[in-house]
Length: 484
Image (tube, rainbow, N blue to C red; front, top):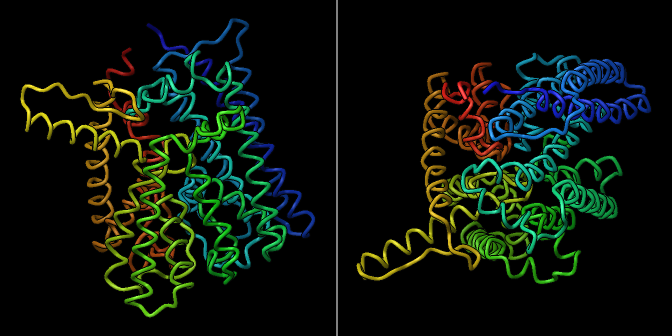
């Protein structure tokens, strides 16, 4: 059966038109500051808008559009890839004089909400470019929420089908249609961003800094307006507001929608949220205790630094208030392993996601009980529902593919001349969309500017893989997929 690409052209065209309109905001900011980069944003917006309109017209059809599974995979991957290609234009032609490799890396890091950067001197960078970085992460954050709710469950990617019924079943849905669900979530996302912007403004940031950090906090992206990240402000109040915002961005937005629709226990009763909050609490307690008892911090600062940096890494935000690598041998293994965890499905976060660990735990627990009682009948459960065999297989496959991709990325970066610690943690931070790696080069006090161009392209591919749940991208490399 011939693959109809018209719906894909149409959707990507609409997304590019949205991206083009987004470029106008930093253009106006640069104009107000008399920064010549406003011309770069104007031209980039014009080119992006032209291509977007052309694609939308090429994909326009008078017939009602339907998406097949194959079309869904192509649309999911190519929409993020094409948007990154055009989102890189303002970086490539700005006064920072970045190569297209660096521009693409920065754009991919932004739109996948990874937060890795190749830019030094952010404190003196043009305001329009700083706003563009924040906007990319904000748009990427809402994009992945909509994908997790409307697209990935349909594609049966990595166990996401577990949430298909939860989102759209007639007896258990917050709103009747996918479009209404997406619109409702977008309103909540915008409202939370506005609330955090006002809170950060009152806490001492300028309105511009507050807007940028609010966008990258709720999106759990991690781009800051300063090389010193949030540590630049040296404010306990700001640290607390952003820590809470990162947690808010890590919870399922569908549950926020249900709460507003009258189901006030939706968040409290969800097992994924319960697991996430318990893990966060235990890790914060561990980090706080270590800083207080071993590193000599006072209790208040121990809690402040421990909570902020643990939440930042586990949610994949990537902000930093201090170089946690100097905390001693405790920090390196803890921060490396929590990179992979991530937040809840249907949130802006990255990583493996809490629900997959729950499914893995349920499978292991069931297997142990079967070993002890061979004649017993034991069924694994998730959120008080039996886990279908296809979900179990999908989740186990995800863990295997994640491990293989992580190993291959690490080896590829190692072959490009990176030392062991830098290679392994850079592969982890790209695949888990976290931001900073570990080590002297790309740790929380460094960046990826000195990496070879080939390594930046490999990491960009890793970011795309991690953001789209691996299978969505990898399936396109199967010859059988294109033979249909």
